[in-house]
Image (cartoon, helix red, strand yellow):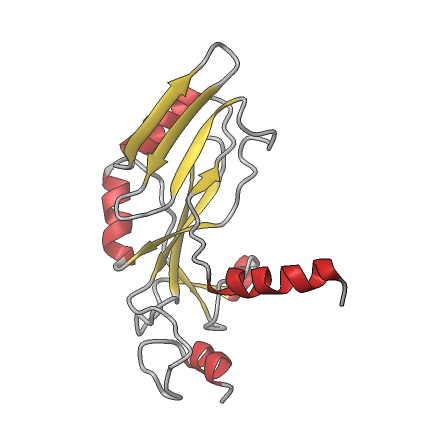
Length: 183
């Protein structure tokens, strides 16, 4: 072991126990004002709207109850507008959250679930309309897009996954329980 490797071993052990929290996700948009109206219309909190001249602007919103924010603007990302897909917003009641967003003018698609029971497929042929019939945690979804086409997914989670699940935990689909418990 080299002296550099020996010195980095404790650092690696420290990293394993260090908290790391997701703080910010950049959302590429083509029209900052339109995106600002959209996310404000969703009821999200406007944290920052900062500009330092014509080529830089940062707008930050935080969804209610979230510790992670989104940021969009001018001069903050080279990603193509509308290129973000599959950001998950976690809700405790998918039907109620969808109804709320529809009432705010957000075009949220019909709820769906995956017959496989673990995570939704990208192939719509493998999805079933409606919420999971037993309303299992992690099993029901609905999606919507912002005006640029960045795709968001609402996911119903009523109980968090853990390595301490029992082999027949009724809160989750049998597929998730089998995967986590190895049964």
